[in-house]
Length: 223
Image (cartoon, rainbow, N blue to C red; front, side, top):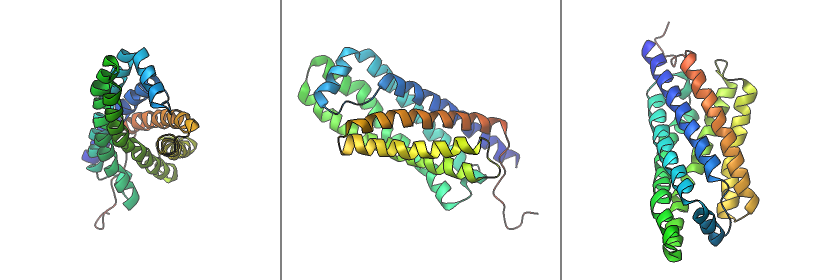
């Protein structure tokens, strides 16, 4: 049991750190412009901020992957069901998938903007946009984790907060789909706001996990 508690607390620590970094990234990043030329102009106006934001994202996403793997091995109630185990497994996969976007935007995309190479920018932006889809599915994974937490009698954050985070995760996915797949400008604002709200709950959740014991999954021979 001590090992279970220890792993959950380690996982919670890294969850809080990762989400704190993602909040910083999202605030610096801002909403995505529907028009590519407008987006290129936005980056050109502050290339250093853009690059720093995405290096912070790369660090945060890497730590998300670590947190997910630690929790998966914790044998705790957090992974007690089919859907929750799947969600925690999705967390490192989607984080690593999106990590390539962060690195590409901090390097190749920024270099293309600085050199004024529109064709290079468009090519790398298409690559980054495709890989960034991973964040949309990371948001769905968080929604499942938050929903499970909201229904758990052992939850470590208030039920209303967990339900709000679940809705924010769904809204983040929806906003991404509307903004990037259907090119609806308001979708990008929805994605940004809901992603920050979702990440704020994950920070709260992570910190709470470091302070509260989380029980192991009951086994058949448990007494």
